[in-house]
Length: 313
Image 1 (tube, one colour):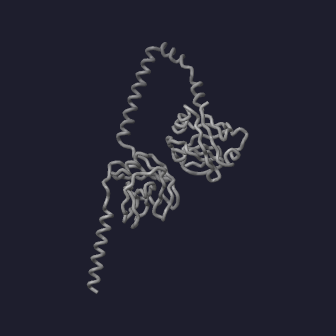
Image 2 (cartoon, rainbow, N blue to C red):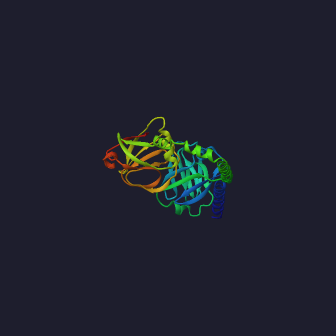
Image 3 (cartoon, rainbow, N blue to C red):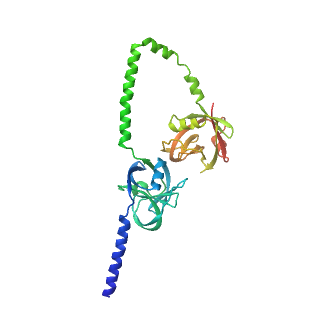
């Protein structure tokens, strides 16, 4: 009996030592930190020094609609693969950010033993409130590069330079009033320029009027249409929207939005969505259809997949 107790104690010590090794084992980290934003709460994560973390960092910012799994993790299937170097996890810690396979990004909000293999990407430093923020279902999670002191300093140095230039311009104008008046008189082509920049939208060949947003995403979309019209094949989804790939990524200003019929939005940075119903999700607004040429939006969009054309006119 005593011998059995000793054997059990030794085995327990060995198991404990192995667990401690994996618990304390961390890849070399970098000084790069990213922000992980969930329902308005911002967490800071440290990245490991490996190719997977490097590649993911280069793709930021990303706003992902992550799905729930097993009551301990959220995951998202990435459209493009990441370099992978999977190892047996043995133990998962709350806040771990890992890659499963080569295209599934996983954020863990609980600690537990695991027999699966993952590639380490990073971990959230302070996980207080993480589980509560992520909740029990699907959730929108934004990953971004943490603002550095250097970028803040750059912005700070820009402003005085702009102020100095403005002062110098004002002085020059004060000294040469006639030249200023003459310069002001000679500038007429703004209305023509604005008209040339107006985007036109056709849905299945039907021209519709759109009030476009004045933001970076809409401006980038406009640039895509400068050389030739942009045609996008849309597919029906959910009985309230048509969605299709733009073919490239546009700047994102995603906010939680409840859409209405006629709204045009950017989803996941590279897909355009036109609504004939309503949905609530995280989008970047592009515009709103104000006149559908005598058709209802459900007539234009609700009968099957359609092609839209965006051009400058």
